Length: 240
Image (cartoon, rainbow, N blue to C red; front, side, top):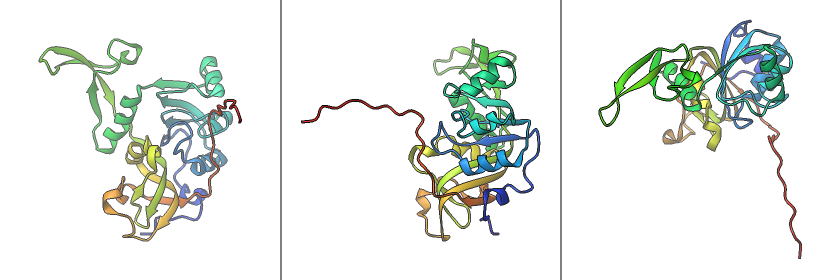
């Protein structure tokens, strides 16, 4: 099975439609599948729901799709760096489902493992718990405590960014770029990956593989990339 496609557009062919749920890897601008996001924007699909830690920044990452009004809902844990996100949310143009960061990652991971829901202590007694089932379980000391039911995220499509892949789709993520890419890759009906390098099967150390190729259906080589920085912070130095 040839999993390598010549372009992002080709890899997404037949997968995109209006009103779909997409799980997207990345954290800020670290490890985001930018080539695939660009292709989704160019396709013109709309009414999209994205499950992603955040929405990038203005005109970068999912922020590109916010600018073109292609996103109707975000399932996120952090949205503080995107002015257009803020504007659309406050004006009622964008629906937002806030999910604590660890809960969001577990909702993706759980769905990838076939688990439709789980109970967690995180969010009990806050707005996060509103409308959710509450059940009591014993804690480590044997005392009964409230836990809320969180649902797994079963996405129509997963898009992720990896550092290296072999021809069968085994993936290696680079350092902190592993972040949400790993759980996001597992929870979609189809997983499309952009990588910086594809090597022959058997070239990767089996102990260094982060995601088995069984989860990956399609791949593209997205390199080269321009390093994008969310904030540039400088300080004056004394010379001499």
